[in-house]
Amino acid sequence: MFYKEELVNLNKKVSNGNIVNKSSLDFALSSIKDKPWFDQVAYLVRSILIGHVFEDGNKRTAALLMMAYCTELEIGFDPERISETIVTITSKNINNLGKIKRLLKNVVR
Image (cartoon, rainbow, N blue to C red; front, top):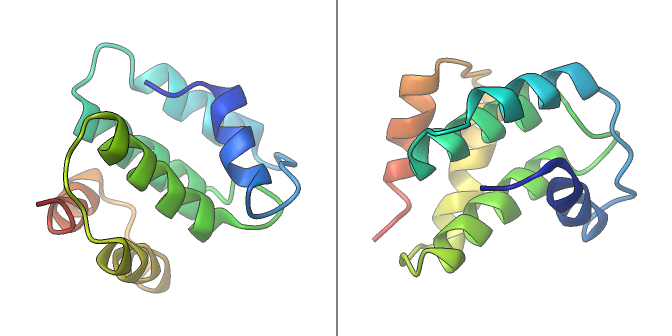
């Protein structure tokens, strides 16, 4: 499970780490307790992308988050497909958790 500080550190890899929508991030973090890892990812990705949690680098942060979860759990993934999926979620403004989970499941091996 990821915590706020870890998410900020992920964003700092691509931007400045400034949170501009604290409530969206706090809600997502409070919603993922005791949930399976894939639900955690979906909640956090939705919060970051749709809630525009960070000042800059939300798409890159969401992609890094997905890769970090997969790496930590030793699950294979395709970085290119993760990036494409993140762009799809953003460009189509997909906010339904079920749809986000289905899209993200297509990037793991």
